Image (cartoon, rainbow, N blue to C red):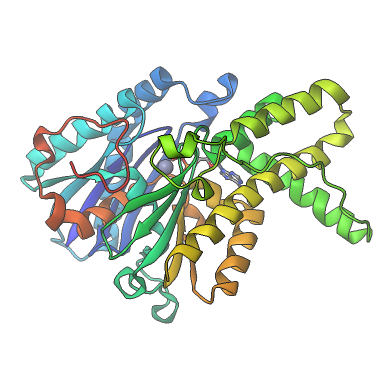
Length: 367
Ligand code: KG4
Ligand code: ZN
């Protein structure tokens, strides 16, 4: 079954075709990052307009790739689209384009939850990949603990069986990606901050190690939540994080010390370490609560080199596999949407033709 997936929830205009929920046949992503750089973050109005402008091109190129990679006569069997969570003016563009496409192709339309789709990315592979190197089938790894870490989300998700999701922990304010982006903005490093901080921190840590120096990091708060706040969200405090205190601590540090340019790498390495530890602790706590068979991670922040290493150590200690996506599927893409629709289609049904966008949709929430 070939599903065409469309994604416009934030600042990527993306489409892809995936066969049977795993094999990516065509994949196109247009990133709007350069448009948002002057503002230091995503501007919804600009995102929406750029989606309107780019979506016809992205879909056309995806279909060209699909035709080039399949035998003559291969068809699209369904269309899938992100209907939430995300920015309403951005989601609307994708949803409307998908409705039009499904109507013109005379195929069903499935609505997909963006956060659930991020957790499917480790199971994607490309047409032509070595048969022996393909990721395992998701059904074989349940129950699994999911971790979605992106610019919009930081969530620990219980997956008792494939296609069922329950949030067991999350950030109570900023997402990890937002914490990276805000710090980079404060330090004048530009947008998006995650990759920049990752690179600077990596250089700082490896230079210090190369010189045989003891790594002296600034102690920033590691995301502890204020008493009672997690309970208000109905979640255990040990599985929740808050990054607002970390951001304030960074601001205070900068105001107090007026750091010189050459101090920045140490500051960002310390800041990154606080985020890594915050995520590591909650992940360890979540793994203790239930016997899981895998740790499945998705989202743009899962590209972070320290986070990847820390999660690898945690999974090894728990003797379970760690599943991470190929780098090109960590950020937002249409392949994860097409693939998720294949797995969820029997649960959600093809009734997205009348659907509206759901900007605050949670993982596990039914349409
Ligand atoms: O998943 P994604 O592309 O979009 C959302 O759904 O939010 O994630 C984007 C986020 C941005 O906040 C960006 O700074 C962060 O992922 N990011 C990283 C890295 N690469 C991207 N954060 C830390 N380290 C990285 N290497
Ligand atoms: Zn995303």
